[in-house]
View 1 (cartoon, helix red, strand yellow):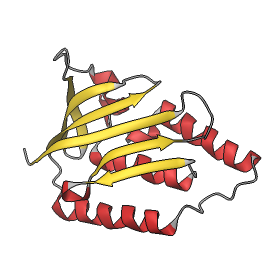
View 2 (view 1 turned 180 degrees about the vertical axis):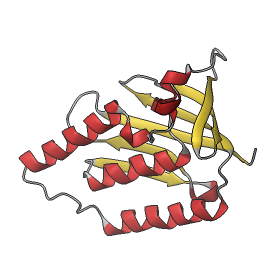
View 3 (view 1 turned 90 degrees about the vertical axis):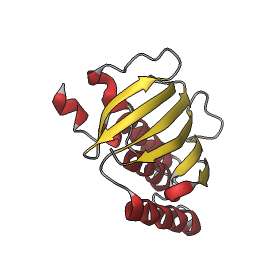
View 4 (view 1 turned 90 degrees about the horizontal axis):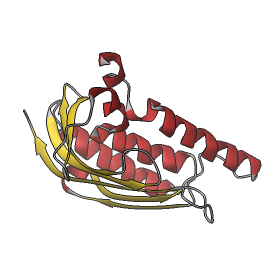
Length: 162
């Protein structure tokens, strides 16, 4: 189980599969990959730099995921040594089992997921950055007109340090 916690959020099977599907869709439709709006990519990069300047290897935050996928919900996430060390469902106050923590991203993983959405040309991306440059609100529609491919993430209540 410990080895699962060391994998990044974007290495999890559902995220990898989603990236593959979006990439294949772009190729089949004749879209050019990696041609996202340069201003959006620059804004992402600037905010990632801001986060990297203040981040610590230990922090906690509240992560909300809304989608037609596993682990939709709201979790209080604890990060230690840049890895998700634990998470608690804020509704029932139950801890997330250790072997499922791979499904919950660090804040770096949230940046990575957003960057992957831009690079794979999701049809619609809405982002609002907040304190520390963190993407607090992310709404992604990967394929316009497709059913159940939307993803909404909220990253709030960040507490830096141990």
